[in-house]
Length: 181
Length: 213
Image (cartoon, rainbow over all chains, first blue to last red; front, side):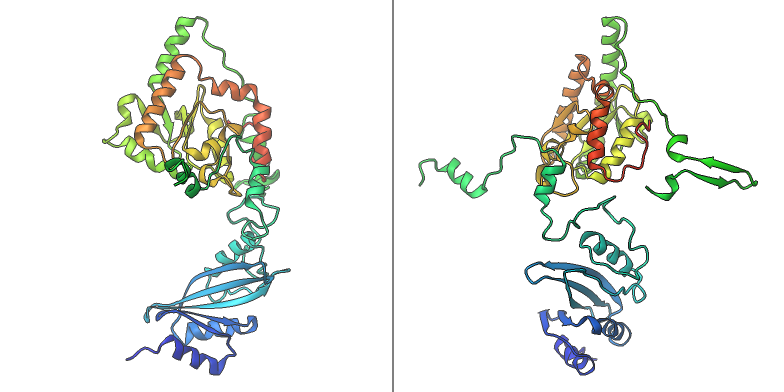
């Protein structure tokens, strides 16, 4: 049986759900941008009808210039050996998303991590308010791009004076060709 | 603070009611004290010689540098011929090798382990990360300077230092111990408040007693 391509799968899905654009990375890896409201029915459809039974990961990207977070739900079709990512854009202010832990229990762990590292709320997710990696963190979530790690590190960890940082290219040039040739 | 650490009343299986306070019940309440040297210089020299020749490392890999411990203890580099061996518990060890980067979360466990070790005890900082943060100098969760939190006797630079560098560092530590200058545990006891203040500044959820050894 010939497997349908990602483009064909996209056309089939598009007849059922309103979808955003399709990005084909490889023949077996593609991404679809979807609306937040479409995510759950689409995930259910992909899991139960199209064979994308495995949630590979759930991660976020901080598009601070656009004022939005991008959530990526990467699904795997084990038998078809292909992956499909769903991208959902969220407003950055007061970011919150519906939990999908009832579709894949592993999602609860990813959501806990996203809550801690990006500050995205997942209200119904189990144990989401517990510390995941950081212990007792109260400030800006560290994976947000408006969190300045160097500034935080310098303020918190008492850096040892005398550390010099050089531009490797310029420094090597200076060392190897001191007369500037 | 976690629920299981709070003061509470528990019921035993035979119906007795007990009031427990884990942070007070399980730990010592006295700060560490300075250990005076032996009464005579010759005896102290003998003690230091014995200490230097039996460095027992706590088998706690705190960072990526722990990977250098395996070649060090296996036949190629064979640190055991120098009287160095690895022990599974803090009570049996007297040398703590902070192997590489130290995250704040691990620092908390390191402090607990260090305070449980018996005097005299030594700390070796392995790799650039313990000296000035190394490649993690701008990280939000790794400390940049180990000697703010624990008294360090020897630093071994490198990223990562090879087992030869570690052996050389241990030889240096032996020299320091034999000359009677490895007084890290006493420094820790003398400046206990300063160390505690530094530790508490970075560890946000301090849920252990100040003296837990």
